[in-house]
Image 1: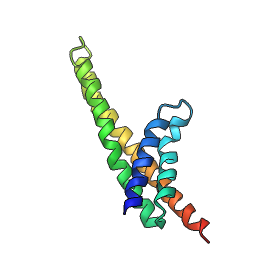
Image 2 (image 1 turned 90 degrees about the vertical axis):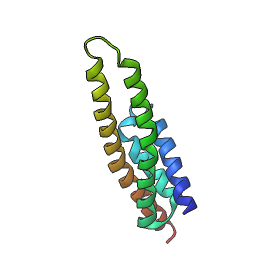
Image 3 (image 1 turned 60 degrees about the vertical axis):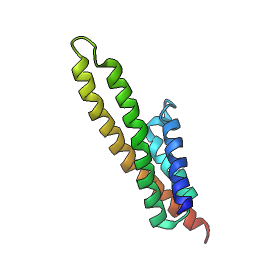
Image 4 (image 1 turned 135 degrees about the vertical axis):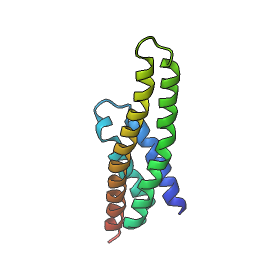
Length: 118
């Protein structure tokens, strides 16, 4: 269980870093998930757990960044309310995208590790 949690943390940090690289950001959760699953080394079940934990850990910084953006732009004239409301929607879209591709990447990474041992 320790490798699954540490794999999920590694995957979350690397996904967050990959989101800031211009071309790589479109597949950032997949790459982070691959590395998380590869490190977790628990087969399909370990990869699935690592991907789900990576998603749970990724929710925290996304909502923090969305909350900061909403707080800063809340008092903007005309579009302030629209921007605050849309940050929640954008945060949910990012989380759903990260969840789906991160879990797929984590399972693939764990299966690659399992396949390597044969």
